[in-house]
Image 1 (cartoon, rainbow, N blue to C red):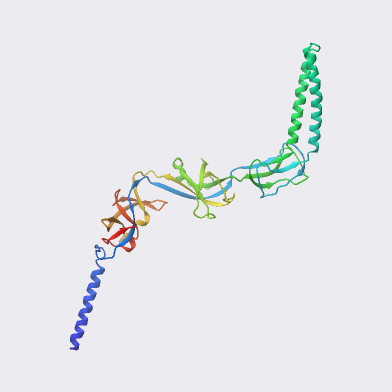
Image 2 (cartoon, rainbow, N blue to C red; image 1 turned 90 degrees about the vertical axis):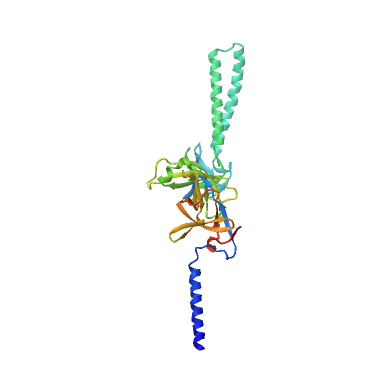
Length: 347
């Protein structure tokens, strides 16, 4: 009796082992009895192959102006310092006005005197009481004193150096009470309303420059935010590192703090030239036994489908050369938890 019980146990063990091996060998056959899974899908479409390129870039000032006086003299006021934000029209420096005010007052006095004299000359000339030569001399003197007065007035106005635009004082080149010459740099100011982005691209990308579009940059200081860029130009000659400099403008920075010297990533797209290519998300594919597969969604089932793949684009899309056609529905997420023939539902 005991031997019979042992025999039954041995037979049960081998029966269980055979069942286990049979199940393990049948993974590639359709599973009809498994639970229904929910999956994400997409419809296969033909479209042009658009690639996105990304390169490191650096922010630079778009407008930097070195400002100087048109006149010479001792600096009377210097109310700004390096790094200070200034508004358009704000006073940056001023020359002692005393000498230029005196010149203007003298020129104005002479002007009034000569204007009075020329008015009398005009009356005499109208009555033929003076010669043409005397009249022309008087009119010439009037023009000269008018020019002298205007020059004195301009010089008096030029004692004030003001900001040409909103911006930041980059460098102050002089000190208060210093005597400076006309044209000597006083301060440099950078435009706060717009910045320039510079990056470097290799020759292989430079050759496609006529196809570039959709420029934008991103900053680690503002995760998830894209800043539109406008192309300024691409240097036709490479730098010493064999890369070509690309320059772009960055504007409309309301409530955004970005400054020259900060690092960004420059992004742009271009048509790769492969028209009517089938592209699917890279994560839709998976490897098995050295081959590439996807799952089609067909009649509520997951259908294992072998595909031949091409290049992988930078935007995580992969070209499909064989195995799919336009209009096919493929599973893009959840395929790791399903098997061939399993019932599935689209999310």
